[in-house]
Image (cartoon, rainbow, N blue to C red):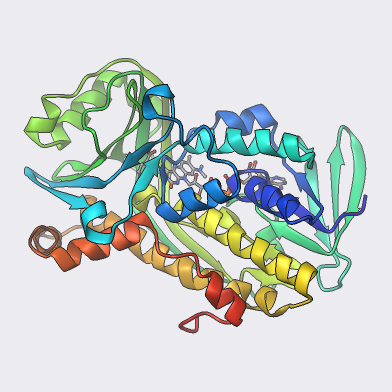
Length: 406
Ligand code: RFL
Ligand code: PHB
């Protein structure tokens, strides 16, 4: 097979990139290890930044999301709540930065993307195995893989590694520098067909640990509690989960909690990870293949989107204008945005979680941060600026460099 761009991994990063490239008249082939149904069944992120919403609209992917909420559409949120023990505050995004976020699950984004790929007529091979990358230092890189029991090869101009944190692409960047930070806890998440406890998300920091109230729609709630890093799902009965959640929420919220059977329950370890650079020769990395953040800032999916918007713009410049400066700038420009999301996710995790080796000093620092947010409009505006999403630095890409050297 021969194409211009081979994309490895058809999660949100890979499938959005394929759609953007097809829209720009750049042929690509998409390879995915899992089955389509498996990818569509994964329950993951729920919050879309303002910029991500704009990208989906511009790419004609927002039809279902923009339906009224009562008809199953996304739910625009003007703010979020924070709680520390029994104190509460609200960050009013609309007032502070005139932006909002959209509650629209990654599962829905993925479904719209797979439908669009079908309409685009993209060559999309799922259930591929033994994917390997070759000749990345040349301008004819190759990807080999097994599909339906047959060994195949694609030659292309570019290979884009969108294969997530357990993929193979990242390992093909020699002299890679890895920056890693792990947290001594995980998140236990459940989905339940119950009305959400509040109209907005609530991030709660409590002596017993962190809790988050989120939602998908009027009769589908998503809740998380901080758990031990080595806990197993079987350790957590539904009863234990609801009791723990209620204990960590301010009383006036806990009183409104409607409980019910969980329809999904999973544990996610928390870590921060960045692999630099995001390019080697004709290989570019995007999304979780290059960086992972703890879910606290709701940034993982949004970073995948901003990376591939940059990749698509760089490849458009390469093919349509014969300009390679944007491709050369890609890694530094993408990393300049990635690190700000890594910082915000780390900061919000540190502010809201219970650390096992935490001293009374650390708890006072958390209280002081919280108090600063409660009393300073500037502090809340900084929160809102980061949470609703920093701009996607397309201008920097075209200028050929990040605003601040990475
Ligand atoms: P993905 O979604 O992991 O997609 C990568 C795809 O590549 C495939 N793949 C391969 N394909 C071919 N050959 C190989 N050798 C391959 N190896 C892997 C995989 O099957 C997969 O389909 O990465 P992408 O596209 O970069 O998108 C990133 C987002 O999915 C991710 O950042 C977020 O979902 C992170 N995340 C969350 N983010 C949030 O903002 N809020 C959340 O609540 C939240 N919860 C989560 C999460 C990630 C989780 N993971 C990765 C286990 C919960 C979980 C459980
Ligand atoms: C979710 O709804 O799954 C969700 C929301 C906000 C987060 C993480 C996950 O920070």
